[in-house]
Image 1 (tube, rainbow, N blue to C red):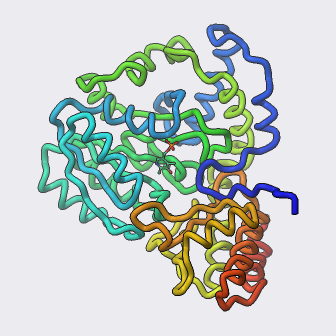
Image 2: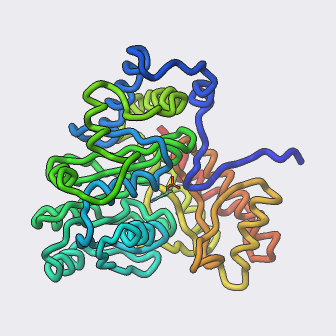
Length: 381
Ligand SMILES: *Cc1c(COP(=O)(O)O)cnc(C)c1O
């Protein structure tokens, strides 16, 4: 069989053909009016995605660069921060804080579980000197979507700022920055934003900007005071990834055409179809609060989860994702994120059924596919 590649992971995600084509355009110089016009048009588009009036800064890095930017630009040596840690990416917040000498109060959540805003409120009460609360919108390692609206409500009553890692979640599940009062929101380009890896975006509200002005943690490349000065001159402090800017502008056309609510609804439908299929096959969901981004599925008894993912990738060229350490093999993750359509769900579920049959699991071929088809037929607009 020809190895046709099916990218079904929660990042990187497939890139639309029209967006890919933009990457082949000649590079223009970035210190020109021509580029500034494109850059500012993209910035405006990102403000729409973030649902904010604040500036959105473009970083040339993967998403983690924006996470590091948030820590180094908001905090000072010895500051205290609360980290919501329910998976790999929550853990990353704690690691970045530790590197920079920030004192971390970790709220450890079991993988797949959620955190109630009232529990966060308790921890804030116990730690009144907290400067920032770091969380994910979508904890991509488990598939859980957190109650960021609820978090924002409790954090807003304190002097702390709420910093939300929206990488994977923003643009697939609701997170209107201004309406919910999220103080800092950030994302990366290779997930819901439908372009290749390499750009990150971050926005600060006024409460957060006050911290930026006094922060003394070391920073050079990711200094947001420089970024603010530059955006006033319609540019970036250093050479931007020109091709990725072309591509993001093109992908924003699709997002604007669908509207932000429309694109979130699209992801909701794909998520519902995937979950219906998984249940019809007789499997269990892993996440307690599964969302629009990905569906994490418990590996059934008697099946080797690592082998399942391995066969899926090697034999069927369907690149779903396994679970990361320390949960390797215990569940697997099927994404329905970014430039994926209804038939991508069918591919994922069909491949899953075939792998389960290969591994000797008692599965009726087509049962999950039919369940997904029924959701898609009903909801397809
Ligand atoms: C992918 C992801 C990251 C890491 O982003 P990189 O682009 O790999 O640096 C961080 N947080 C979340 C929630 C993610 O999904």
